[in-house]
Length: 275
Image 1 (cartoon, rainbow, N blue to C red):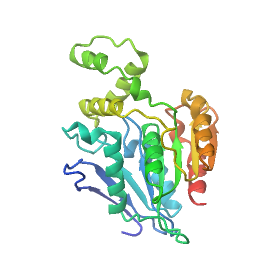
Image 2: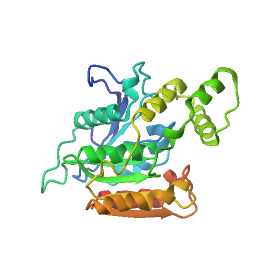
Image 3: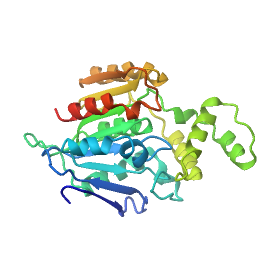
């Protein structure tokens, strides 16, 4: 597979149910001999939208890194399972763990730079990456969290209002809910009802970053004009108090929407993960 990327529908079973997740594993032409990088996209996005179209995958491959990219349930080329459990953050993290091992990741071992796994998450992906790092300290080497937040915006999503809007066009009063739903509908590949199942599942597992803090080095990145940047120092504080190294990068003029396209973001992440 050297020198090209491979993409396939990843079929495996976790806890007895096939999560129908689409996974791509990309191999570099010149392997740097470092651990693979797992990419976790944001809500209503996809691995193609967040990581391929923005140049992340080519940049990581150029740096000699093996890349594992996955579409979350109901997103991109992944399926939309009927069981609610497939959408819970804990279940998604279990699926990501098996995907990583299936793709060749193995536990960290002193003196072996190819062991372990680096993780890059954006927006919702940063929440999942934070929790993944906290629960998998024997596997995760470093974390890069883009557009991170102390609270998950999806937790305040008005499900009832969204369902009414989809049913008969009743206007949504909450601007955050309206914006998130509009964003979800903008990508034709999204299964809107599956995304609402994801929101419901997230509400059932509230995000509390202080409850479990990753103990590996991390880089936190946000756009200067991203309102989420305001809580980024609090996340860094949590990490530092837990004894972790936490670097912060603010991207001038960038918003939550376009920070992911920043060349400075890519360069900083690749340098940080190569340390």
